[in-house]
Length: 467
Image 1 (spheres, rainbow, N blue to C red):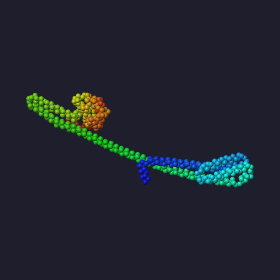
Image 2: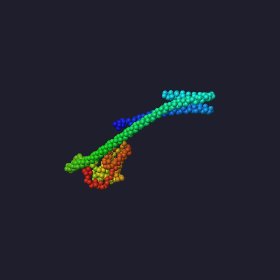
Image 3: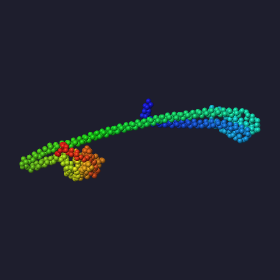
Image 4: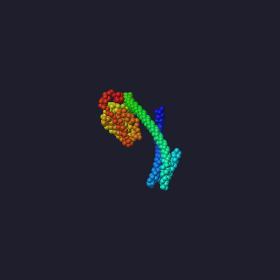
């Protein structure tokens, strides 16, 4: 039950208010105990002063009686000095006792009796001195020999003792009050200390619970982040595989289309050209118009065959399979320069790449030249193929109008080429600025001679045969 209550207080957020309330209660208890103790100690001090005044009153009366006896026996005036001082001390002590017991109904009758007896005793002493000074020796001796002085001193002693008893009772009550106050303060401090410790325990437990909750949430977030990262990696891998499949399917479709054009369309154009040649040989003499028509038809068939070859070369570069990457790039750049009237400078070194990487490099240069012809308005293009630090680098640079890559994203063609470069384990960098031209650079891992020989020894697929 107690732990359930602590748990509810902890969940309710009462730790700090409880600690603040405990601190306030501890302050109130301490201040109250201090004030009560101070008041009780002041009263005890007054009681002690009253007891001392009673003692002073008693001793003063004794000193007065002693001084009076010495004067009567010796007649020397110096014995009257204690008597005179005692009279002043008795008056001062009675005045202070009257002030102290002004509100004490139980002590007032005793104090009045004490005052009357003191007055009577002083009067008796004064009478004896007066008789001595008057020369009435028998009278003061008779007064001295009576028991009136003894009875007065016994009565004064008894009254002083009663006053001391009253003061003792008051002092004991005051001490008991101080002890009660100190005990109350002790109990209050212990209780507030326990409450403070409870509040501290609740605070530490709540802090630990919050820390545990924070760690749990952090772990949950980390697990979710790891899951999302794994999901992103999985999706990225799927997209990579899909893009690779699409690229392969695209190249396969290009190969199939090139093969169909080469086989079927090539056969049709060749048959048509042979038919034209047969017609021309069998018709004999022809009119100039018919001769021009046949010549034009033959030239059209030749143009169709050339177009078919160019299309097949674009779809599937037979020069790459038959002559190698360097020769294929030289043919590609030369034909581009002839079609676009843009000067192309080639610096092509022999490199070692996988067949798929060679095809990727060829398509990269082909796509770059197409973009230059469409958008760059360039006059000079430079193509560099070289090996640097065991890696193959292909660079295409133009002096065209360029563009700002921060404000204008690359086209789908370049994005596709970047993806194909990365699928081969390489990296592509595109740098350009307005009016400064464009530089496209791809870096690929070099193919080792062993793997290159193994690849070369494998039978070529349909996509790598010549057109």
